[in-house]
Length: 95
Picture 1 (tube, helix red, strand yellow):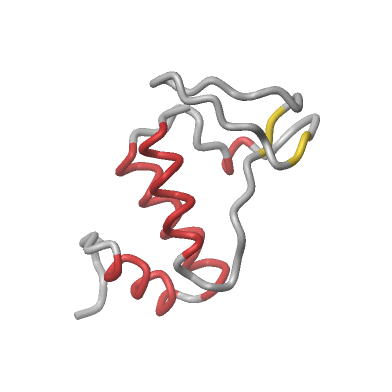
Picture 2 (cartoon, rainbow, N blue to C red):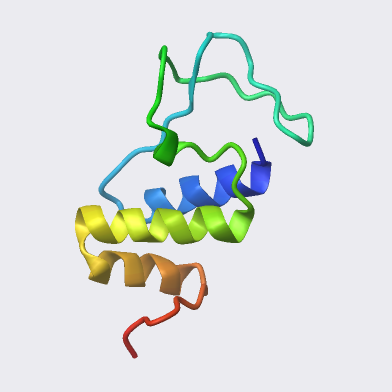
């Protein structure tokens, strides 16, 4: 997994102040990232929905997906505030 993608997604969801971020993995051992970080998972699960995986997404793609998911869960206003806090321009965002 890419550390920048993981950090952007975790930061975006944390900025909603309505959710918490957890790292899931197939085993309780540390998970090696592309750059060699070895974070330990918070929870061990057998499977995770593919659309929720951050593994192979480029940073901007992962953040855009997170903002769409935040908008779907908490409303577009919340997604807009998170994007504004990150100074990330959203395509089609309201002025």
